[in-house]
Image 1 (tube, one colour):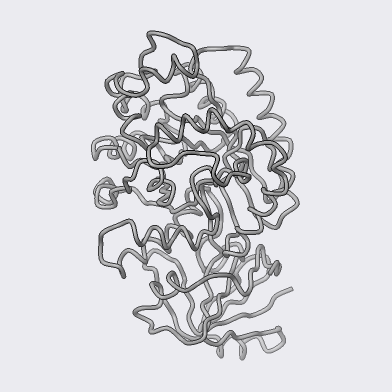
Image 2 (cartoon, rainbow, N blue to C red):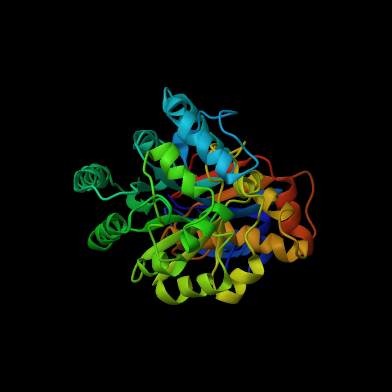
Amino acid sequence: MQEIIGASLVFLCNEKCEVLEDYGVVFDEKIVEVGDYKSLTLKYPHLKAQFFENSVLLPAFINAHTHFEFSNNKASFDYGSFSGWLGSVLNNGGAILENCQGAIQNAISAQLKSGVGSVGAISNHLIEVNLLKESPLSAVVFLEFLGSSYSLEKLKAFEAKFKELKDLEDKKLKAALAVHAPYSVQKDMALSVIQLAKDSQSLLSTHFLESFEELEWVENSKGWFENFYQHFLKESNFKSLYKGANDYIDMFEDTHTLFVHNQFASLEALKRIKSQVKNAFLITCPFSNRLLSGQALDLERTKEAGLSVSVATDGLSSNISLSLLDELRAFLLTHNMPLLELAKIALLGATRHGAKALALNNGEIEANKRADLSVFGFGEKFIKEQAILQFLLHAKEVERLFLGGKRVI
């Protein structure tokens, strides 16, 4: 059933990042019309209508990269360096996965309360899938492959698990694939997973150059990873699985791929992603990046390469909150550029660009987009020129959340 909602300020989250005053939306499952609120109520006098004073109406957020499976973690992993963190994950990660259903449910609730309507969930064990199906969230679940040596048996088992995930697809849950990282997936195995994605017309995701240790290893087969394989995987005289970053990038030609992190990717590497990968999207997780490598994504570099950036929370393996609002504030504080400009990048990174990365028909307030809408209330009306920044600084919990036109909060 159609209805109308409006607010003092409406963030369209379109390419221009327009902010409109006293606007409204007519919607059912999809957005029917956008316009001046009073004009809409006169045009559609028979529809239920509600206006939110001192509030912001905007698209529901898209959290394009998170790991629900690690939602049990609080202080089991080491922060301050990527190498220390990765070692602690391998030592302690198994215990975190035990009895994690309640923690995953809490994590899903945290997404909804922060105004998130869609997620990109990286999964190794599919523990979270049924909980996601039962929730109001739309989810793209990326089944992740790891394997530093070739194993046909492992590949067949992975393909069978992916078929299980495909069989669970419905209107709001889609199956996708992930190649973990250049240091953890043997090239022939990676190519097989990428071919599986092409054959099934699935999205892909990969962690890419999130640490100096990874960069040093991929480019020169030197550094911390020299001992990593022997210590953790009992493999000696190991060399990089790829002939540099470009060799890794080139595998993803003719795919739709999310490259996650990228802080240590050179301008040349980013331009190669842009030129070689059919549909390439960058995801940044600023809180995680600060805890592990201490380095933020170079936004000037990504702009020069012509790549858009989405902002995501990563998982509680490298964060203390799965609120995307907290993550957007972290984004504001970890990049040195004019705040008003940065606020627009952050907002679009959690809406329009996230939707494009996950190939979803939402993330903007526009006719025929899915009616994933949120309303945040405040004690005062923000000045239009400051509105996006003030919203990001002060928003804590969504007041109304509509997903596919249905009110869920």
